[in-house]
Amino acid sequence: MEVYPVAEKGCKTTILTTHYLEEAESLSDRVAIMVKGRIVALNNVSDLINKFGCGVRLRVSGGDTGLESFLTQRGLQWSRAGGDEIQLSRLDHKTAVDLVNILYDSGFMVKCEIRSAGLEEVFLKLTGATLTGKGDLA
Image (cartoon, rainbow, N blue to C red; front, side, top):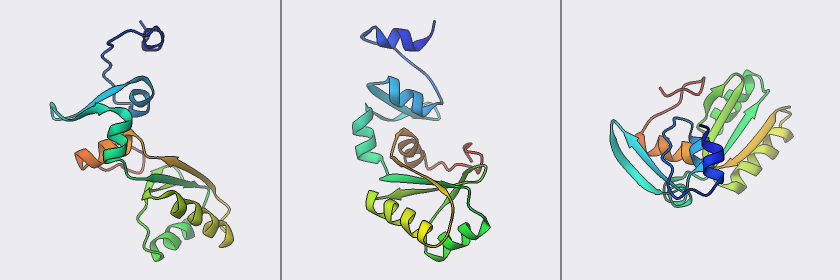
């Protein structure tokens, strides 16, 4: 049985276990985050994001190696998000938009995506985990 039709029928309780946090975020009212078999957080999705979220994240793709040094010289912390994508997290909306404008004004022809914090950021913050360049847990 698929989860989506069950969730759409308005069932009172559906227990979903997943490693796909975007799926959990979109299907769940309440989420428990577990580390080594222990629940470290349990709340509704929006409260978890508001309490533990880290602002917005900016994903930049299509830049050359000069982009990495450009960001580093400005004291920005970034990580590889897979392929040619670079991710900057824990930004506020204004900083993210300003950075996109600075990149374009500096001649970088890149694709940029700004997203609000989600359960992925909450999970990483609560567990202390980091992501590899491929997006896997380090």
